[in-house]
Image 1 (cartoon, rainbow, N blue to C red):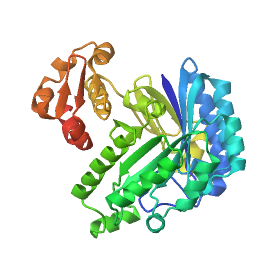
Image 2 (cartoon, rainbow, N blue to C red):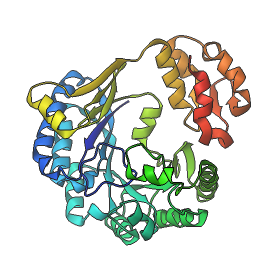
Image 3 (cartoon, rainbow, N blue to C red):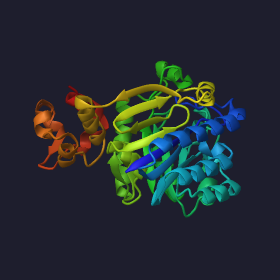
Length: 369
C-alpha cells in the first residue's frame, strides 16, 4: 500500500498554536505554487509509476481555502500519471469557515471521499482566542453541506480554561454533525508560536490536567462506540483513517509541496519550508528537497516499533520478522524486560497497555538502541 500527500500552504489566518508550513499572507502565489506542485508531481510519479496508490490526503494550511480548481487539477494529474485504487480513500482537510456548496460540487468532480474538519472546540470564545476564523455555527453548517460524506473532526485539549464538560460539548457537537472519526490532540506549545508565551505565563492547563482530560475523552468516546486505534485517533469501527494507518504501519507515501515528507524505497525526504524556495527549485528543474536519509538497519527496526506502538494493536512480530529477517523478542530483549509492566506481550504481538498509551513516548524510548 502506498499513499499520496499534497500540502496546501494557504490559509485565511494563522492560528496562535500553528507551527505548520502555512502562509496567510501569500494567497496571491496560488497559481505559481500549484504550477510547480503539478511539475513536481509529474516528475516524481515518473519515478514511482509502478506502484498502486490507495490513499490521497490534502493537508495544510487550509486546502478548502484554496481555489478548488487546484484540487481538481491535482486529482486529474494523479489519475493520469499513476494507478489509483478504485476504492481509494481521498481526504481533504476543511476549515468550517471556508466550505460552500459550489466548492463541494468541484470536490465531488475531483472524487473526494472523506473530509477532515478542523473543529478544535465548540466554544466560540475559545475559538476566537486561539485565532480560528470559524465559530460553532460554521461547523454545524459545514456538516450540513457535507452530509452523507465520510467525516472526521479534529478536537484539541489543553487549551485555555478548558474543562471536561466543555470538551464533552465539543465531542457531542462533532457527533451530532455526523462525524464518524475524531482526532484528539493535546496542545503542544511550540517555540515561536504566539501561544507559547501564554504557556510560559502559566495560562494553559498543566500536563496532569491534560492527561486527566485525555483519559476522560477516551472513556467518553468509548461509551459512544468510538474505539481508540491510535493514541490520538478514535473511530466507529470501519471509519479509521486508512491514510494515517499507512503511516503507522510504516507504509510508503509520497508527499508534494512545501514541507511535505515522503518515504519511498527506504528513503525519507522532506521538501523546503517556504513557498519562494519551493517555487525557485521547481522552476529551475530541481527537486525542492531540504533533507534526505536512507532508513536502514537498527534505525529502520526502531522506526517500525516506534510507529506500531502508537496504535492499539501494537507491533506485529511476524511482520517484523518478514521485514527484517530477525526475531523481535531477541532484538528488543532488554526493552521488553525493562518495560514489561507497561506492555501486553503475546506470541504474535507486543502492545502498550491501554492505560499507558497516552505516555507511550516514555515507553518507546526504551526500544531505541
